[in-house]
Length: 281
Length: 168
Image 1 (cartoon, one colour):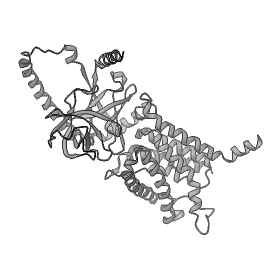
Image 2: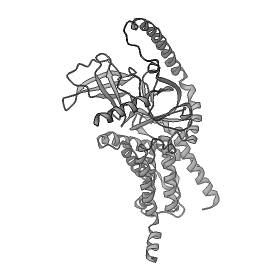
Image 3: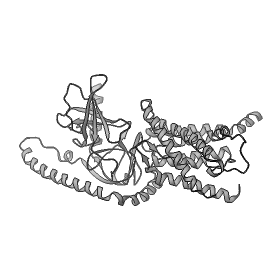
Image 4: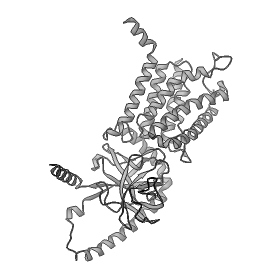
């Protein structure tokens, strides 16, 4: 017994070292499995508060760019309103009419970016709205120009967003010109380029074609811009295209984002799960 | 250690940590060179500090930085490792005449060659562990290596430059 105590006291530095290493590695690898573990990231109240203060100083420097972006968006939205009003008239000829709840299922919450990275292998964004504003993990986030990411965790007034620039995040996408479905994922190095996969090589892919979110998407409404086709190649296994997509969102100057709250998501998921079970039986 | 020197050590520790979190975090050169100047919180502690304190301080500093980088655990792992290896590195780098009693761990007292070798060694270990953990994919080994090399040069340079402004 005495020898054991002596051994421990002699090796206490190594034992503490081993303990701390195991603890930090455990934190590192378990972090992704606990979406509500908000203490150790930037949605932590004190960390977010500190970032907010330091961000408010920097804000003035890129006001001009933010202004231009917002003005462009206003213009785009005005055009869209006009177009939709026109379309509604012609659409009423067809007998399809979306249920008003379905048509209005997406609600947008405007939030301001507090902190973001583009250069790590897994990038996150901190925004200044949280569960108090109705946000929850899993909701989609877009900017005025395109897709941004998905909420990972929320505290009361802040949330952390997994950006599209994250090695484990894929978005279901389609090509606008011919509706080919694929998925978009980041390659890990260049923050302006993402890769689109799963598009059969026997389909034509045009350069500069717009890549948008597909209709089979829980998180995003369909037809939100992701980016533009920049380079087309063929993968080593010869079955799929390898497409480089220039991101529409400029992550370097991102200042305001919209969080998309799909109010009918729960209903859709429960229904799909139920009918899936029924089929098995 | 006198209370006064302990107080100044705490100030230095806090200075590097705040510098990292609020200023250097946004500093990235050519998308590959990152600056982790907060490593100095551990590397600049006096020679005679005991290993237990060193390990605990390193873990704490790593965790604080992790919170702001959203990389829980990665910096803490790397920092704990270099805190554990620090005494060994100091032993290996012993000058021929041995360490002088009055020498302190600073650029002025140890000379440029010793200080740069010492800082760069610990920095390269830290960066290698950190970037490899973050990538967690061997396919990204080349970008990781490039990041490690560029960032080591950047971090070491910044730590050394700050040393030139010390008055002691």
